[in-house]
Image (cartoon, rainbow, N blue to C red; front, side, top):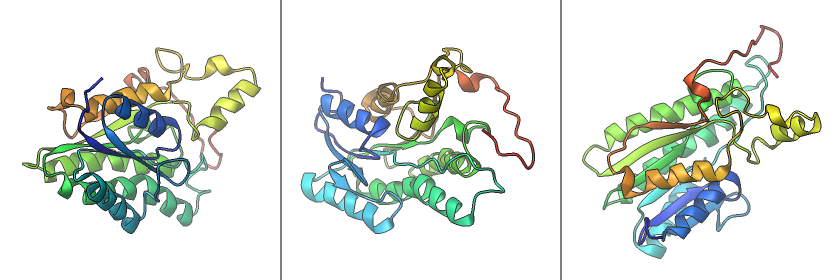
Length: 248
């Protein structure tokens, strides 16, 4: 398998879930991959820290002489508290990791991708409309969708493509509590029931999309937010959220 043969890639949030699955996919297709995370990856990196992200990109160039693919995947959920329950500190941290993190990766990686390449950012269906995550998380992912569109335009002529993936419900460390709660209540069959496929997704299914966007098969895909949610966002599932009541 050689779809990424000779390519050098960085994947953040690589210690588990979607990031780990993507590292495996990229390596299987011939890429040299630097997996970064706070825990459980090749390199320790805080994805929302400017100096750490710059050092990660510099390391890729120093060790391998090039950088072709970046998957800015690291993120945190921040819980489901309402606008009136979350603090400014909560919002600052969620935006720092989920939105500033991808911005930093684009800022530092794009200038060294001299032969062109692919930058992929993890957004979410929560960034498309409400009801799929907490307010700060949703706002951060809406920001990512806007960011990739702006970045694609500002990189005109560079041959660097910038796209986002918008997963729906996927079983990862971030959503573990949702899956565990459903299973404990004997409601595992309800997971993902609002989408037409009536199931949750698997990390490999998102990694397959990241692989496509990283490869030359997506050579004309740019500035796009690709939704991978089993069809959830094809409609508007209703989730009532009353003022003064925490959404569950």
